[in-house]
Length: 251
Image (cartoon, rainbow, N blue to C red; front, side, top):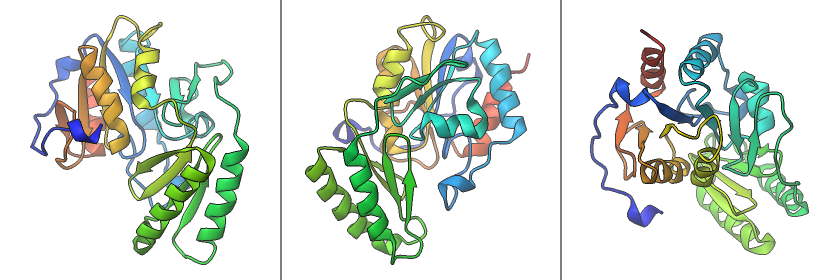
C-alpha cells in the first residue's frame, strides 16, 4: 500500500456538497477526537454525538464509524446507535444487534503477556487490551520505539499475527481484514449501499479506506498535515472535521 501513496502535497479542502448522497465512513481517534496520551483519556462529547446523529439521519443512515478500537470500546464511548466496524475491519455491529466478531485467539493472550512484561519497567509504555487484539503504546516514552517495533515483529512471526502500526503504537491482531475491506463489505448492504463512499481519517491505517472509497467512485479526506496519501482532500485538524460535518447538517 505505501508504495502507491501519492507525494505529500497540500490537498484542497473537501466541498460541502461531497456529503450529498455520501456513504460516510469516519475514523475515530485523530479524526473525530484529538489523540490523547492514553487510549482511555479520550472523551466523546454530547455535541459530537448530536452532530453525527443529525448527519446520519440526513444521509438516510449512511454513516459508519470505522476504527482500530474494538466495537466494545466504541459502544462504551457512546457510539452504540451507529453502524460500527472495529479492530481494523475484523468486527462489525449494527445498533441493537450482536457484534459480528471472530473469537479471541490464544496467541493474543500470549502477546499481551509479553507486552506487559516489556512495559513493566518502562514508564510511559502502555499496553491496550482489546477484544481480539492488543496494542503497545509508546507515546509517553518514544525512546522505546525501536525496541517496541523489534518485539512486535518477533511476536508476529512467532504467533502468525498481523502487525498494525499506528501513531506511536504497534498492535498485533489476526489478519485478513483492514479498513478498506470494512468499507467494501459495508458498501454491499443497506444502509450504505447506493451511497458514494467518503472516508475521513488521519492515520496510515486509514489509507486502505481511502483506496477503496476512491476505487468505488468516492473520495478520501486526510486529517492533519500533508503526507504521502491516497486521499483526495484534506482537513487540518479534528476541529475542522467537526466543523465540516456540522455544515453537512445545516440547511
